[in-house]
Length: 225
Image 1 (cartoon, helix red, strand yellow):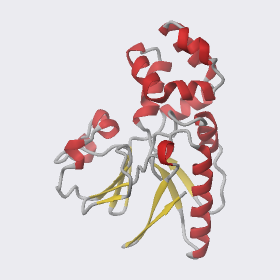
Image 2 (cartoon, one colour):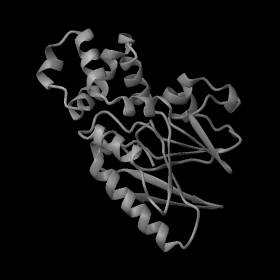
Image 3 (cartoon, helix red, strand yellow):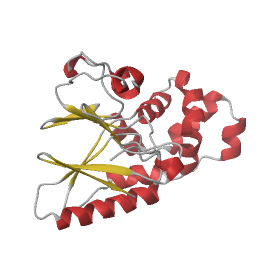
């Protein structure tokens, strides 16, 4: 599943669509993988993280990757204020509001105060869980990652910076990566399916459309909220 960005309603709708699709396909061992960026921009980041942490479903297990937005928030919560301005600009304000921080106080607060308010508002359980998310997962012929990979670099040697942030070098590449890379991060109006990668970030916080790709053997199919 692509970038949720604090959009709880499309997230719940797509979970239900996946559940129905899974039931219609017959018995299988099903795993749902979220590609990161659960938070920021949309109004319900805290609720989205709660939903993921509390996942209980008898039809599918859940894995969640780290996104660049989670990494930015975790850096701020760990006291690295160099990330504060960019995080707030790209959706951190909405995340803090979802955790109950006062909006007027955010607008008029000093960086140290905002960071401290964030540390007080975000539950330790959320903070620790987000910080423990993996950068990538491999399943069969597919590699799941938030942003992409550096072409020509083995997966074990990829930098966290590239896995979380890379764009054009990866998006333009026609290289065989050794696996089909399934990623989010780079918004497109439609599913971006190429011979070496599948991009499924359809900008849920703007469009209301959250996208998932189903994979089983050689078969692929897409579901959207």
